[in-house]
Length: 349
Image 1 (cartoon, rainbow, N blue to C red):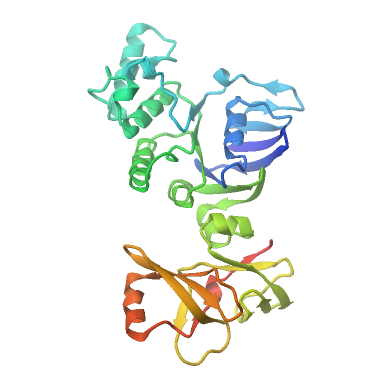
Image 2: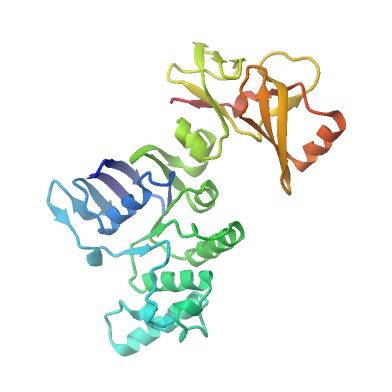
């Protein structure tokens, strides 16, 4: 179990994050500069919070009230930095074995086992400069595993890679960690990485945790505008709640009436994902966005439309898969776009 309560002032920036989870794969999602890395550094002991506590599997690493602050080397926490932080003047096997404190024979046996587990056989005498990005990552992970950590922290491990390499290395990382029984926390600004890797996620905005839950739960019902944007929702607008079934969206000039859902008084905005809109030809009625003008951009497997509404809104997004694009080429652009009731996100602010 991971239990965090971290409070610290960094100049003008205030970190105030708390969450509790029993899951083994936890993701922290947030924009650059929101406090994700500072949270990891606090867990690792690189930064000391002013207030709060950090408990991992019943072991207290930090408790301001009890004046407990374990040094990083006593925390059994493995930290994978963005650049992997390998020692450039050491070979692969030297990097892996650097922190081992046992005898020479046990160390050699442990290094050989890790070389094989992380598919580094034959690379043991090479220096980091001769390794590919994936090989460097595997070496860094092997070095972490030599410590037998209770917790592994992954700090934007794919941020410097292109899209293809990110996907491939994420897959490799998940395979390498598949038999690791400890907890892994990964921070990222990429919703795809977080969604693929995590069982549970925490969303951070400006140093504050704004929502936590299972990955599917948060993506399906992000609750807050920032969380909706971070999970990929392109269309978000403030609403005026008219009653328990009806809202008016001024920016889009659309009144939405929900027959199977109740709009609570906390709802201040709605969102609709760009893939969830339905094209409508002919009669326009009900919860539909009238299409006035549009621009489009073609991608290999979809076409993205940027719609100008009759209300004047110019940044409404509609993403269309290739199958629907063929219909649009035949029938032309629709007169309106409909909002499926079950796809509308209710947002509190």
